[in-house]
Image 1: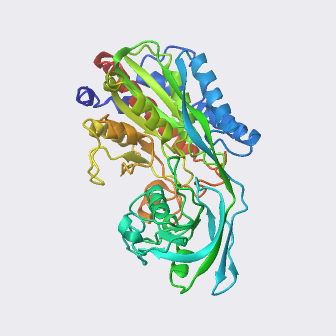
Image 2: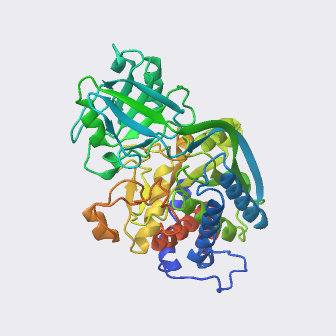
Length: 487
């Protein structure tokens, strides 16, 4: 199916015109029966209406919208209400998850050979999805590899813990495998707690500061854990006879949460065009860019495209518990009957599309940028997003299918996938600053996974560009050839 669309696109993008400011006083109470009309009606104003709603929900619920909390439930209610009013069939899919809360009183102290206290938020932080606990014990480094360019796989293999003293705290470096794997291996070796430190393989803040990573929802080891900066971890690794106190002031409680699924009432059920964005924030903040931006853009596009009679069925998903380890999207795909999974022609993912120091990244479906090829048809999706940007004179770059967002379950099951991303804790290069503006040497989102990810933590320009790109690609893939040519 995907190849059939690619051959009819020449000249169509240019006909829709350049990106420009738009508002809702443009006759949009109508049937948007062409891509041009649809793009006139998908507006930054509309996206920001939903962003403001998510910000207000977070403010009213302790500053976050994380899975399993009232803030998330209110966010899901908001999405359901908007999509029901727009005419979609809306369902809520319930699944089990752990609700994690960081109380902000964790402590880290060196008790031997010196008495040293470290600063939470500067030197360390609680590891998301750590168990609570207070441990004082000797510290044993686990297969540490220091220095720029290192390829650390610390804690990824059982052999890394050969001879590990039972009851010690494991000092483990980021790199290669997930923190969950590292944590489970440490527990099996008899560790009493874990100090994870950043990898330090590059000079970027994302590999030097406190790592913004999680043990994940599936973590089963009953161990407390803290995340440390690379500098502190490297320092501790070189101290003989080191003993430390680790106190993780957190709670981790089993609960339930939900995905929100909205499906068009018309369209061929054997040809489903699916798009999704995770709805939850991290416990540390309101998540207005991560991922209020993708969620809000998707609501705006869904509301406007609802006015189109499309030949293919369109299905939207707002995923729960992405921040706990892609839990909602994995649950959805893994419980979907095989015939229903086969009906999904493609999955489009939108996770962080308004980063304040943004890049304009397209998932690398053909593998030309990162040698990680998506399922057959993913290259066509990438090419269509590239064409949208190129015809408007907007530069873009590929980004890897790194496994860090909700496309992963679909890719694992052979569904063609693609989407957009504006960057997280990675650092903008000078060449990218020349291309897109912004500040070289600064993270694409300096407030990634932080309390400052508020309504002020957005690029309106990136939101406007990407909302249109989402609408354009969804419309074309949900349309037949005649509708495309009529655009």
